[in-house]
Structure formats: C-alpha cells, structure tokens
Length: 148
Image (tube, rainbow, N blue to C red; front, top):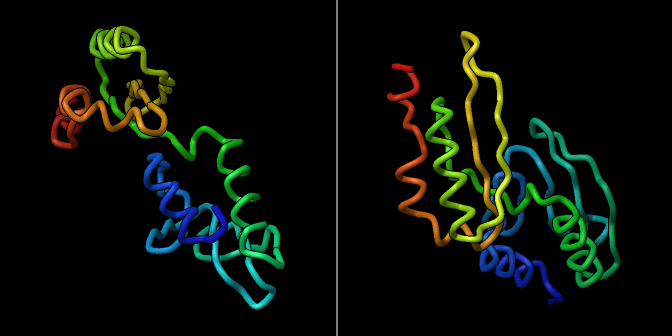
C-alpha cells in the first residue's frame, strides 16, 4: 500500500470507523487528518476544526505506513457500537450472544442522566458486518431512551 487512496480503500474494506479519521471522501469533525500539505504528505490532529500538524513526510508511502501503524495502535479506530441499552439483563444477553458467536467485544458502561447507567458494547473491524440483526435487537432507539 503506497498511496492515500489505497490506504482509504484498505480502511473501508477492513471496517475502520471513520468517526475519527479524515481521509479522502471521509470527514470527521475531530481526530486524525491524512492529506497533502505544503510540507509534503501530512498527518494532522484535528479538534473543533483546528488542525495541528503531527508529522510531515517526504513520500506518500511513508505517510501511509506511519498512519496505518498509528491507527492500529488504538483499537477505537476500528470500534463500532452494536448495543446500547439501560437494561442490565439485555446487555448480559447481548454479551452471551457475542461470546457464542466468538466475536471480540468491549463493554463500556457510562453514567447517564438521573443516575441511570447506559450499557454499551463495541465490536472491532469486520465483525460489524456480521451483526446487522444483532444491532437491530440491542440498540435502544432515541424514542425508547426518552421513555426510560
């Protein structure tokens, strides 16, 4: 893989999460930005629209190699949410299904409003392709959240 375009295609094929990656036709409000710049080929960090140069490269291939290594260091660049609920039994059932399917996941519970806990599960990379029905079952919709 030598070009930014090839890197973008690789990231798409391997189901990276573009919520934090700006490359080619993908735009993220915050995260890593991969593009050509006045210094050559550059990797930026972006926060609230402000870009900070992390590293510049003379060759596109160097940028591609470095960027892929950076993305692979942090599993959250491949993470996709597949379950969100306020029901502890529901999240335990979701975990059991993922274990049975032998899918690697990360449960990430967070405090919500009025003392509620939001139970969340993330999976990584191409496993998201196997879980469309699972998501329909375990992703609580916003109108359901308001009633909880």
